Length: 155
Ligand SMILES: [Cu+2]
Image (cartoon, rainbow, N blue to C red; front, side, top):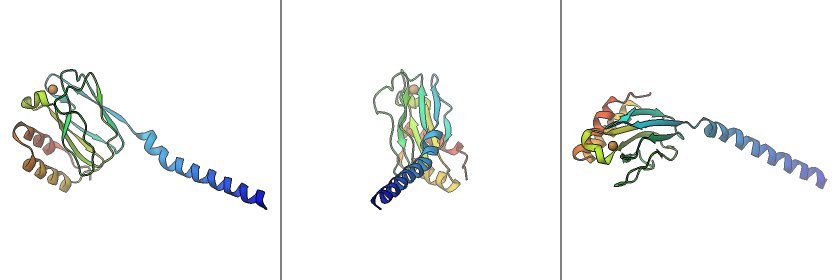
């Protein structure tokens, strides 16, 4: 009787572990690393579309940085203000849906800015982010608005 109950507990435990793995694996396996290259005075590509959980690797960053100035609610900031990024810089996994706007601070005057669109973004969401950008961003940082304009809503 006791042995049987024990066996059932183990079976149940294994079942729970398997279900958890099956549930979590697609997210882990599918996470993708996208590459954005810092050309002379611009990010290439300056607009990218990624899925939640993906990361972005910035290359050729020795004399550049990539610092978020627009982040969706609940989203994480990346990049360090006032500091060069080093040769390469990888963002943490971008889990929050929405539009991330970042700039290269040394070259903001040249319009060296970019956006990362995470997950699905509707035309309404795009309009809301644009409005927020127009209200909050100052001077050359407004260059981000031009990139937001070029985002193609995904749903
Ligand atoms: Cu730069």
